[in-house]
Amino acid sequence: MVRDANIFLQEVGRIMDANPGAEVFFERRIVHSRVPEFGGTMDCLIVTADALWVLDFKFGMGQTVEVQDNPQLLCYILLAMNEFGRRKDVHACVVQTRKPHPDGPVRSWSPDYQTVDEFANCLMICIQEYRENHRRQEAGHPVHLELIDKYEPTEDNCRFCSGKANCPALQGMLKEYTMETQFDPTYVARVLETEFLVRKHIDAVKSQAEAEMANGNKVPGFKRTTKFGNRRWDQAALSANKQEFTGELMTLSRPHLGTVSVLLLSGKLRSPAQLEKAGVPRDVFEHLVERPITGVRVVPLGSFGDDLDSEADTDAALAAAAGCTS
Image (cartoon, rainbow, N blue to C red; front, side, top):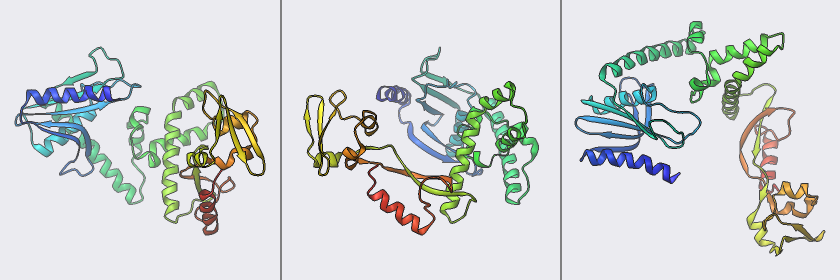
């Protein structure tokens, strides 16, 4: 990771060396002065009297990111010009170190102003449509149905969208599935193709439901419970019990069970799950195990776990979390 980050910093340094006195900003957050819905955070922005550069560091290796005609970088250019004014030259750069590309890990593009202005005009149309539909939603009116077809949900389009919980296109997709009556191969293929979108929509709805329930609003048939992580060894408890190691054996002692020796794995104590699978009774080691609280989840009322929104259950859940051993 350090090596790849250095490739990005070397490109920043190259531009700085070629442009003495340039202003350099990392993680620069800019919101458009006249369009408050439009903003973004640039990995690096470099500004001189005659030019500006926007640089984006892509550490992922799953999808190739092209620099030419990249909408994200064009957005950054528009935001930078709004903040610092138009410059004679504008440059965009993508540094993607883990995904092989014919042009190498560092790829640059210098769009002309005709390209930038045409993109700005298209973007403004989208913003106006967003404002109109937001106004309609606030007033309780349905979103224009033609937008559902115009902005088709895809994995790329929806990956970073913050509106998945209330997206009419995703909702329409789910309704289409529930209306199907015949489970044929074509239907199966269509569901599998959109699995990512459906899962993300459901996750977003769950997050929204959790926030609403935390504010005192009820969701019929569901409750909030404590979410626990996987069992792990409590290092402080291990040290306090002064366990003895002998080769590939470790001695665990319990006052009411006596001393039990368990096999180690490459000189290390196996995980709680591995010990159980090896036949070691849970009573032998449960006092050395903890389950960290990792958050809150929304589950059906009949599911295991105390209801965090019930005062009695909340007290019980906190007490159990404080002394949780299994």
